[in-house]
Every structure is written in C-alpha cells, then in structure tokens.
Amino acid sequence: MKEIAIIIALVWITLPGYSQKANNLIGLRGGYGTGVTFQHYLDESKAVELIAQSRWRGFNLTGLYEVHKPFLDVDGMNWYYGAGAHIGFYTFYADGPRWQEDSWEGTRMIIGADAILGLEYFFDEIPFQISADWKPAINLVGFSGFWGDEGAFAIRYIF
Image (cartoon, rainbow, N blue to C red; front, side):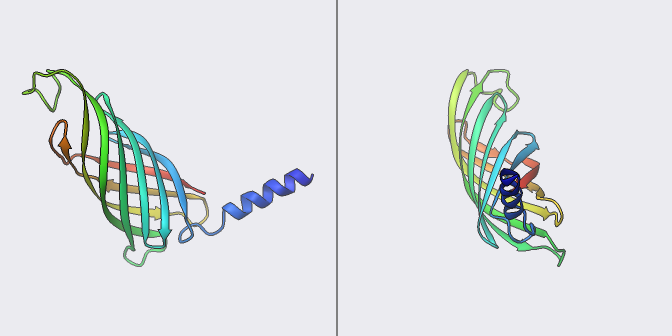
C-alpha cells in the first residue's frame, strides 16, 4: 500500500498544470523525415530542442535554440522561432532524387545550419503538446545546398 501511495505522489508531482509549467517534453516527429524530439524549456519563453530523425537513407541530429511567444491570446498556444545546427550521415546514390547530377556513391557526412518556425499547443487536462513547424536547412559540408522542404508535426509528452 505504501508503494502505491508513493507512485501516486510521484505521478501527481509530474503532472501539474501543463500549459505554462512544461520543463521537459519528449515525443515523435513526422513529416518528410521521421524521428524523435526532445525539448527542454530554459524558462517560459526559451527552449532548446534536440531532433533525431531518419530521411533519404540517412540519419540526422539537429540541435535548436528556440524563442516561444503567446499566439493570439489563446491559452496554451504559442508560436516559436529559432536557429541551430545539424550533423548527419547519408547514403548517396547516382539515381537519387536530390543529387542525380552527382555520380559519386557512398555515405557522406553533412553539417549545416537550421532555422525553425512553428506553432504549438499545450493541452490543459492531459500532459501532451502538439506542434507543427517548418525547419529549413543549409548544408555546408557534404552535400551542400538548401533543404527547404522539412516540415513536420510532433506530439510530445510533458514530464
């Protein structure tokens, strides 16, 4: 009985009002690339986000610094923007959709810069947040170029 009381107390502590008291969130991100996302709020308006995703026979890890601001006086809804960097490993092939002019085949490391612009909503009654964003990127090393098609939806659990 004592163990059940401790578990209930721990759950109760981690689940207070969600919309403005989120510190850490983890979830799934889906769009052209799919993966996982982790956000840590530094305060009410600033956060860092880590995204690990797979796309085009490769893997990419992105770190972002974000600024979050209220959106249209809707409780729990924010818009956000930010910037960061990514590193990834992609298998290039001659008949690939993005690099047909490149006859080189094999795995390459890419490094680049990212931006993000999004909209998020925190539910009041459940410990979840949903978001939609656009995350353009410029690769500076490896396959260089602009990737402007990275948009995604995410659902995150607040803990």
